[in-house]
Length: 326
Image (tube, rainbow, N blue to C red; front, side, top):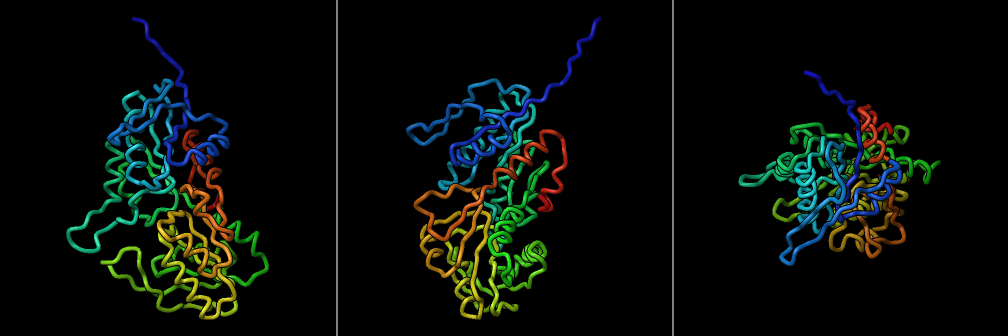
């Protein structure tokens, strides 16, 4: 009996949902690949259909979709794409979700509540995902919800480099919007040259989502340019109140830096009028022109995603990306 042997051939293929094609195109450009063509549309009743127009058998598939509004549609499309790849015999499927939808629901605050961030992980695992790649999770323990590798990337180097370049020579202070972000603020302070730290003491009513009260500033901010950092800004109420509290208590100026610009409802108007010198986001989520304003800056996350995708495909190390040392 004769045996058949073959040299394994690796083939990277990039797939994009319809939520944020601009980001996918930038990632493809950095990887020097083209996005795999597909047919995707909605039936009259809202059902989503996806079919890839090239063979994906044996490929190393990276499926990029931003979980932006309408978030449930984008997540469902993402799941359907993964299912289609699994049934078409893709060798490995990496889900690239720059923003992990439902990540704020990572634990039960009271009885009879869901842990929807875990449900998201289970859904993608069932659909056929082998690996997840994401940026700045709301809480790091979400990595443990998925039964497989999770590449948790950090946007800190992208945002901090902009701060260092734009505000060189200023006396800075890093401000956490609440006590839960203090450890992240410590990393920011170290990256910006061991600047002073402060945080906003705030209270939140569990029965009134997206509302918080900034009570007082804890830390030395007098005469300094304060950098308020956060993972996401949704309605903008909390960060707007934080900016006002900082200015009232002696900050010379305030800059806001956040990874994910969810920007629901009146967020853009609140941020534009809160008194911040600059509001900085990355483009993990699409920010349309009508939500932008003069003092908003949007930085590209595509180089970071492309580098991580290349390392995963090449079986290289992404530890430096985990640690924010891009």
